[in-house]
Image 1: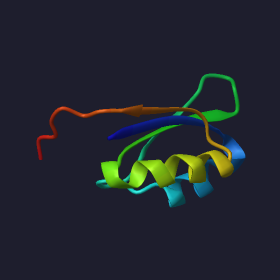
Image 2 (image 1 turned 90 degrees about the horizontal axis):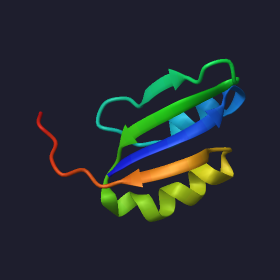
Image 3 (image 1 turned 180 degrees about the vertical axis):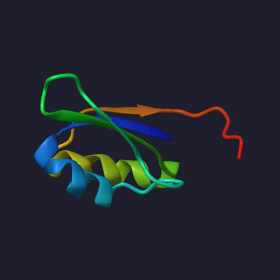
Length: 72
């Protein structure tokens, strides 16, 4: 599953440390907002527990997207 979310700048390190990923999450600066967009591929089995945890850490606008294929 692909998890995408927005987070305030002061929460980004805590959010990233809580997110599993294949390598490391992708982090992008949201233009003139003090927020970051974070995305990561996570195991489907972890999503139901992960989303509430991320929400409690300050994540906002969380998207869960199914991945059809990953090519390594």
